[in-house]
Image (cartoon, rainbow, N blue to C red; front, side, top):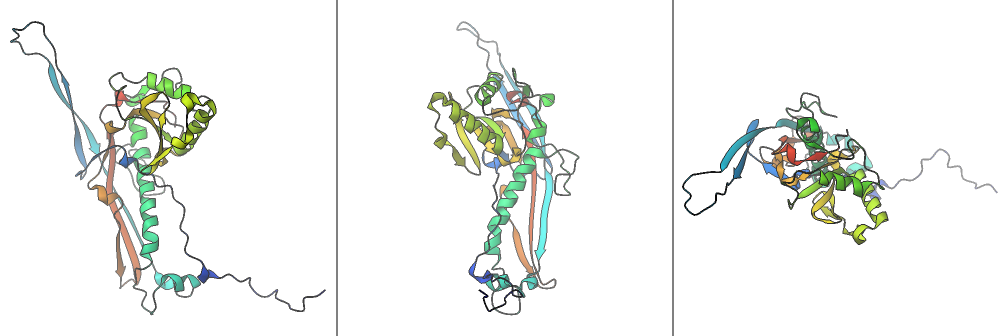
Length: 317
């Protein structure tokens, strides 16, 4: 039976005003919440290291000094980075979305839209910061930018070629669900004995490897492993490693897509910056001459470790 009405020339109804603006879902990486921070760096500053070693002598009448106090330095070099963009809000006046995000009037000098987008900008900034402090490669243009890092990120610093320990018994072998416990255990067994009892001994992996490890530990049910014990601490996932009360496995955005696994004391890893708040502190202003809303984020970031020999790596890309 014919409908009697021909609507083939009409567009399907789409009530754009009834909806809300949905932002990208962003995993906010922030390794800097977990490691040490050194502020006030404009370009390069030393990371000062001290090693004290008392030497005990027998007897009561001891009048000969002994022992040692050694000072060394490793430089932290930061890279200057700027994000700068503008939004011409006039382009929204002819769209349904414009009615939802623009205030009444012909002068689109409102910054109301910032309340909906600033949170997303901060998350994206945290994400790119995390990516940078892990994957920066000195002298090579960083991905999706024109930034040329002044120094390597943690992945470049913590290699066996730069003094970290290559994991014994597994070498450059990727972690699987079925081998996760044994491989991490072997990495910890390769650890320098000076840090085996460190209360912040950390196994750093990408979030995809983290999930693989959780699946493996859950399947093996070692030490009655409880997967609900996974925590979101700051902006990354962490879980205690079964059988090791001082060891945490941390899944970070900065190692996404990588099979690299690094173990060592988190406090010995240092992120250098000028001012911590600069890493996510956006400036917004309306440019009346350009008739556009503008924003800028400017910061400085670099990485260093105090003792590469305190870390174990599988050296994978």
